[in-house]
Length: 484
Image (tube, rainbow, N blue to C red; front, side, top):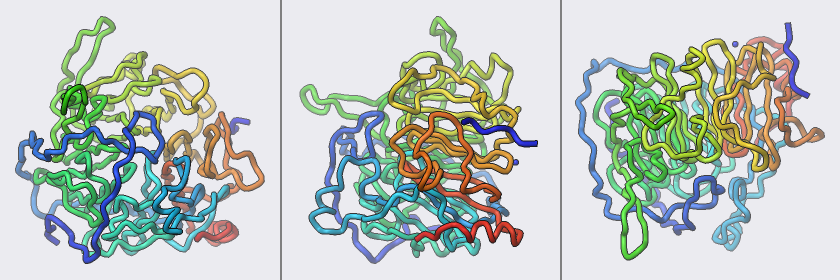
């Protein structure tokens, strides 16, 4: 049943690693809603698509992003078989070598030893980042593209420190299907992992980069990062939005898919290898008339598999990319090549203060703390073509939201609430003896009494950051089973 309301150093361009990465096989073509085992081959191989304009930083040398004051104990739930999650079978090379993961699904919350300031995953990802209380950066999970940043392609089943980032204060991050972005307190971005579509933004198309490498951006400091499956977004301190990577469906926001005929009738895509500024934000009328939206300063971004959301300082919400199942919120399924204003919120005079993307759906929180959903989270049933209020959660003070591939986990008041269709991997955290899925919001009973500061989800796992200030809170956390 639905939950009932109860009575909030100077950076080098590349960080070197002594370990060498191995070459990866290219897999089958990417479809917009494909599973995590698929990759894209239709990209431009020349690596010379330099359409960026270098900008000069206008901020003082002592500018920095302050790390978050919140610290909490890391609690995890969900799938830990990193080789299999989101795939139909274990990759042949892992099976043949006998190195396939034997991790199990954690159907309920499990405590860890880590006190963290930051916990990051993403709806297309089977890997995660945490930053501990003392500033160490650790990653774990799938690593077949070097996305963990350890200088190799060896899977890590437990959080392992990224040695190459020891001299940097990491305050943010984002993860895609096979790549990772790390944001430093000085507004620099380092990237590693899959780069065959230019999604690392380092200026070339070297297919696998297994050590953190600084992206090719030398303008104003970056304050926000986000990753789709094979593309990336960054926002600078002046609210400028940049994108790079695979351009299909217009997901880079440059008014093009950048398609061309490579040979004969074979289509290919011209990828962006460096951050390229998104120049135009638009509004469309019902008859298709396009009007530029003026004075846009982006404050937040979120990415699904092939679509994105952005919010500006006037609380206006934009969406672009793949439009299937109504995930863009424009009452139609057309792809959008440029960030387009979502009129629903404008018509209601409701500003948007929070945005999140799942694989095939979107969420937004308005300034009155009402949650809206659009798109499709389950493979059967009708799609929601425009933002629609999640009425089961009206009256709750929603504090943190995260979207897995098809599941949703959030914190509201002193509760954790989750829902998502089958199949799941334990990301809903209902426990071993409870239902593994739910089509309506349900309270997560195993976390009752534990205050969760923030929540983040991967493709099929969830990271909780739990407060442990009182002895009672510590006792409740310590009653949970341990992982790893």
